[in-house]
Length: 237
Image: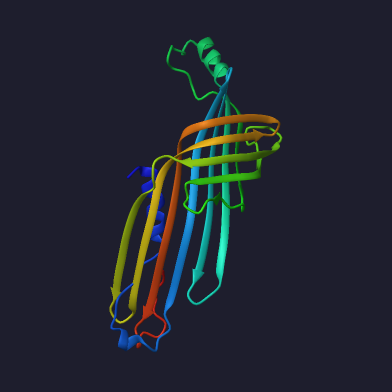
């Protein structure tokens, strides 16, 4: 499994754990159950215009969280990171100092550096073969002396390449005298191409079928069952 996908799957697993005890002994104890379904997409984009290198990272999530019994909550999250560098200025400066060599170069003179988030959700089709984001994310240019505020408009669509690979797992934990925690997860992951536009202030950037995007869906469930004599056990999903 690719590292970025493995880390995301691990994050879903960290959410919980459970234990199995005789059902007759705990029938009178209310069970605590949690169910989580989330979809996630990400992409790293780059554009070079003359000497200016623009790097953009976009991620979007749509999650549904709920207890049984209990209310169902929906939560979206869009995150954007932008970095722009003048790579020629850095090379020229190093050359004047006599330390620039062909094939070397530094990280560039930083022109823009910002991060932003909104609660806008990732949208997707039923089979999760396509996903898209259409939103505006405010951020501050940390590379500017006056804390310039910029709106980054995102209009991107992910298209699945091939199929989603499935990874399943179960975790059973028994704590003597406390109770049981049982969890299960079902993760689907796949590569995707990305097309659309990103506008940083008044600068538009267009991308067409860029490889390197990812789609991931996580279904996670957890149940905590307290031992009848445990009172209020220190167990959680």
